[in-house]
Image 1 (tube, rainbow, N blue to C red):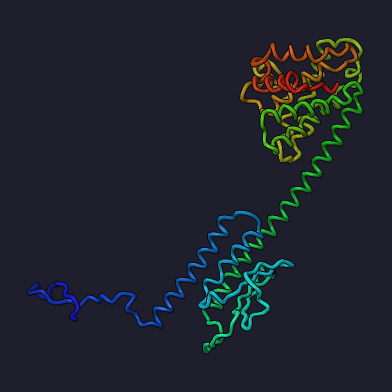
Image 2: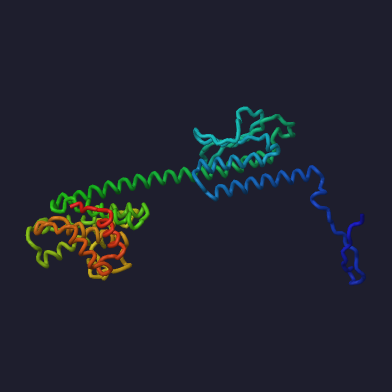
Length: 362
């Protein structure tokens, strides 16, 4: 059969000159070359599949390594008789019993000069050896490539685990610091002993009712437990005064919100603790203190602590008056719902008392 002719032009623009065009399809390639291309595609597909598994990053490092080891055998010429194993410390992820394979090749899994494990591939049956051995040079190169990629993955996972442990330890220390600081404020003012704890409990109940995520609830809990820390800067005789405060004395008491912020602002908490402490006496209409913030300028956590603080303060006994009780406290937040206090926060608080029978921790 003659090859097709494509028309062209001669050097002088004369009659068309026949041009030969090759039309041999891949299916007509010599068999060894066609097999080589097939094997090359399998290897490239394996690398692509492993990269997708790692990039998807679904599940734990154990899940990723198990999915990866399952993708490896199909890249080898005798896939049905190929077993793969990834070793990492005392753990092994495998597709079969590699120890019973007569032919095994391996590559260390390393990154930054550290060996984290080993990648091994073996045949469950003996096969005729090529010049370079039972495994061809391309298989060994693929094995090293996969091992290097796994080294980077494992090194990253180890670094992440170390960072998580560091952050967890840091947060544990922060919580201990909050507990100590909160205790200092209550020791100095016996009449508010337990007040911060009560506010924390009610604030958490409101936060749960509002559906706050766990991380946000952690910050709310810690901030509420030290919301009055600034009172350690207020003269003790004012905190314990058995009669009503004068305007000037009340102004000194009001300084505790700013003082609390000053005490906490330079601590690198993973939650906005200092800001919540600073804002817990602000009001939705801007009539609060110390900055006259209003509405959405206030953190939701600050709005929650504000309501919890008012309710618990009115319920509790004070040196100059007996506790007013929960009915009076709920009447206060109901009357000023949407004006002084956040609407959703008030509704959640009322629901806690009226439907879920919450009791003031006075």
